[in-house]
Image 1 (cartoon, rainbow, N blue to C red):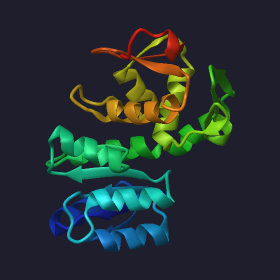
Image 2: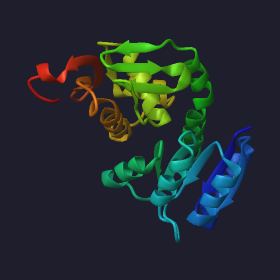
Image 3: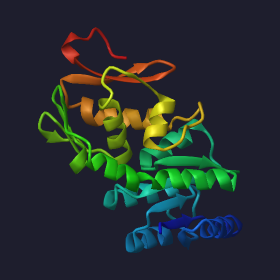
Length: 237
């Protein structure tokens, strides 16, 4: 049974979410501030954290950054009233896997939780995948490792899963909807920046140290994985 940590300072929301999670069959922990939540996360190693951003003391951004230093695999869903694109991008950059805006329906929240927890099954799929070698990039799904010119790339699990999804379909147009289904288990709304933020981080990790550009934008649609030497490209997309 999955353990979920709810870090939320609003007692009504915290109690309501905890009740719904228990009814859905999850084990739960709760914290009313960021530091308490961080202490619980480090001690109990939850499978998923539901994280408010505007917390007393240690805010959600710093919470995510600090927990990511010790655990790259725990799923983090930020749940907040902040709905501006810059807030979402900052949250994803801090280490969140997903972002839910208040007010939200409990059915939607539970669906997001289940989708993010599918990573246990996804990890088993990765463990059975074959090594991919292209350009100066080597991807070993079995070990959750990617190297560029022999050096390991620092990737979070979602970024690694995106890379495997793209590299497993070389030359194919991968829409944002398809990528979100394959990696997150459901489709994001069209205004979501989640895919784009993760792709940007993935590019930084595998392309900045490389002689190749691997991931190419198909504007308004999605992405294509196709290695091209940077020296032979007239410009950047």
